[in-house]
Length: 112
Length: 110
Image 1 (tube, rainbow over the protein chains, first blue to last red):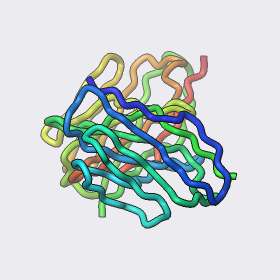
Image 2: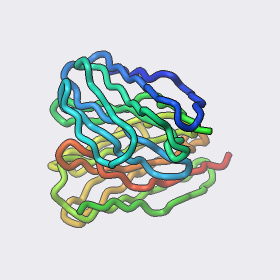
Image 3: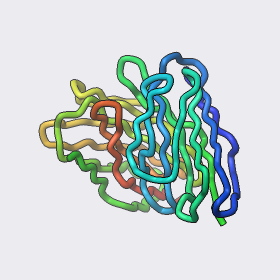
Image 4: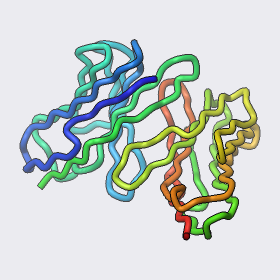
């Protein structure tokens, strides 16, 4: 079965600083990959998804970007963080016959 | 546009009770439906996936049903335990994306 790794687990960054969150997947090949954000007390917001290397779809216009340099690597980036970027960032993968989604442990980002 | 609603938003019951969480969706053209649980500060754990052609799925004390025509799913938890306390989320899949409900926060009192 697949395992999703995310790092770092927690991150505190000043406003205006860059961001790079990494997600890697083991135990599956050619997965669909997703980045979600969950603000405090709120639901899940889909930010990006990818169906293959170099293929990124953005769901919400923002100052974040995503890249997929390898089949099982998904990176979330920002050149300049905003206060509103604070939240819990979750990476997910899906695939197989039923396209069931599985989630990583998440990264808690606080922008000060 | 697909919308997913979960009722109730919060539920507190004594240990040992059987309980039902509800999920409704507006567009019956779904590929599948998943139930997840999320513990505070943690990622999501997939509990059950029901394909659009199925009526129910069971895993241990959990049973999820799906009625596509009425746009409803229920998650039944038997003999609840304090360890079942968490937020339960349902999501329906269309294309590559999941459309999420806001969740039900469940507290099981010892």
